[in-house]
Structure formats: C-alpha cells, structure tokens
Amino acid sequence: MKLLQFILFGAILLEIVFVPLFLKTEWPNRSYRSLAYKQICSALFLIVGVCAILYAKNTSAYAWLVLAALACSFVGDALLHYEAIVKKEAFFLYGMAAFAAAHILYLAAYCLAFHRMFPNEPAIAWHEILLFFVILAAGALLIKPLKLDPGKFMLPMGLYTAILAAMVIHACRLAIACMQAGEPLRFSILFLLGGGALLFAVSDGTLALLHFSERKKYSLRCLNIVTYYAAQCMLAATILCFPL
Image (cartoon, rainbow, N blue to C red; front, side):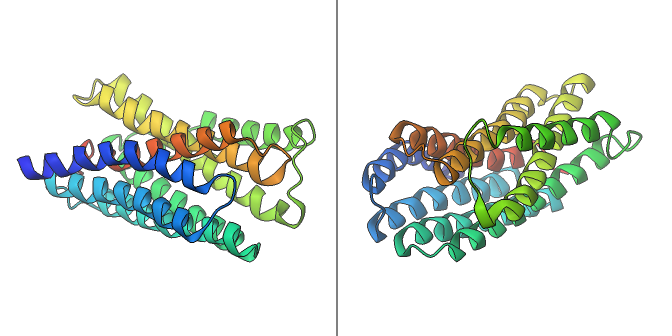
C-alpha cells in the first residue's frame, strides 16, 4: 500500500515537473517532441486513477467510468496536439469528440454516485436545468463580445459546451449534496470533485479563446494547461472518495 501511495504522489509531483517542460517545448510551435511531453503529462493522470483504484480497492462502476473518462482524455490530448502539428482541422474535431465522450463518462459516474448516495432525491433538480440553460445562453451571448469565431465548428462547439456544462453542474451538485449530508469525506469531495470540475470548465474556456479568437498569448496557454492537468488529477483522485 505504501508503494501505491508513493507512486500516486510521485505521479502528481512529476506532473508539476513535466507540465512546465511541455509548455516550454510547445511554445510557440508544436512538434512531435512537445507531443511526447504532453502525453507523458496525460499518462500521469491515468496513473493517478489506476493507483487510486488499487489503493482504495475500488472496483465499482464509478471507478471504471472515471478511468474510462481519463483514457478518453488521453486520446483527446494526442488528437488536439497532433492537429496543431499537421494543420488538419479534422483532428481538432476528433479531439473534441474524445473529450465529449470523457465528459459523458464523468457525468455517468456522478449520476451513478448521486443515485446510490441519495436515492430519495430527484436525479435532476430543477435548478440544475435552469443553470444549464443560463450557462448555454450566456455562452451564446458572449461569442461576439469575446470575438470568438468558431466558423464551421459552431455546432460541435455548442454540443460540446452543453455536455461540459451538464457534467460540471452535476459534479457540483453531488459535491454540495455530500457537504449538506455531512459525509465523512465531504471536504475532500468538495475540493476534488467540485474544484476539479470547475477547473475543467476554466481550462476549456481558455482553450476556446486560444483556438477560436486572436488571443494567442503564452499566459493564456499556461492557464489552459495548468488548470487542465490539475483538474484531471483531482477528478482521478475522486475514486478514493466514492467506493460505491
């Protein structure tokens, strides 16, 4: 067990090392070398997920859904970076599809956890639906002020945003419900699940600015990548909190 702890925390520490290396290597021009660094970073959050499963002896559906989401994210990372190398926009669409699948898997995990922990509560609350449509409306209204130009990716971006919003909202609802119910690991759940989901939203928001606007700033790219890898590690670690 101590070995698993060492590997888990070692993977997180290595993430802190390799993320800056990746950012330095990929800017301003991406290459196969930066792709290798990126996939090392992505492999590390997969390791966090696997170690969490083994350490907690958590072989529940929740754990496997989260691990599958991490695997889809690993594939999506490769596709998005490869698109920037070969300059073929189709790979960006493939990457979006991989991340959409990841968010659907995350959402399924959180729905399962919520149903098992709070069986008497409605699966979807009215305020979730309201917040979902508010977020989508706000996103649509902000396209012009933010000078976003998705072009032919307008529909895929809209669908992806809807899936992401549903995942983040339900993750936060689960985290808040655990706090209100006084669950033993409620503070860890709030930090890892609620915080991780919100960081994912920040990361994808900055990615939209980078890809669909003229804001090609290194500082924005750093925010995009740092929040992304932090989010993935945090969501992977939620396996420790939900042995359902």
